[in-house]
Image 1 (cartoon, rainbow, N blue to C red):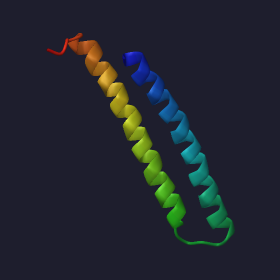
Image 2 (cartoon, helix red, strand yellow; image 1 turned 135 degrees about the vertical axis):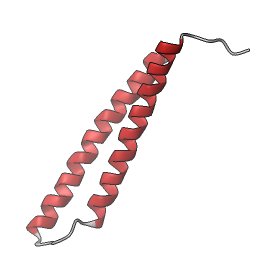
Image 3 (tube, rainbow, N blue to C red; image 1 turned 90 degrees about the horizontal axis):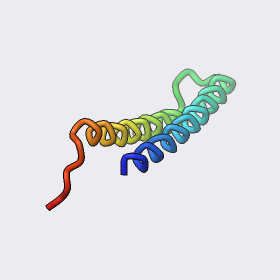
Length: 75
């Protein structure tokens, strides 16, 4: 099961990178448009990116926890 967590975490990392690119594009567009504040869309995308990063981290922590705790069967 830990390989599955690792694979999912890697996919989430790729999504996080895509979200970062979208956020940067939003910021660039806002700057070109003369905005003085971060656009709402960029803030929302950044929040989503952080949530995805947290999910990847949590999956990796499950994997690390399983490695350090050994395998336990459910009764």
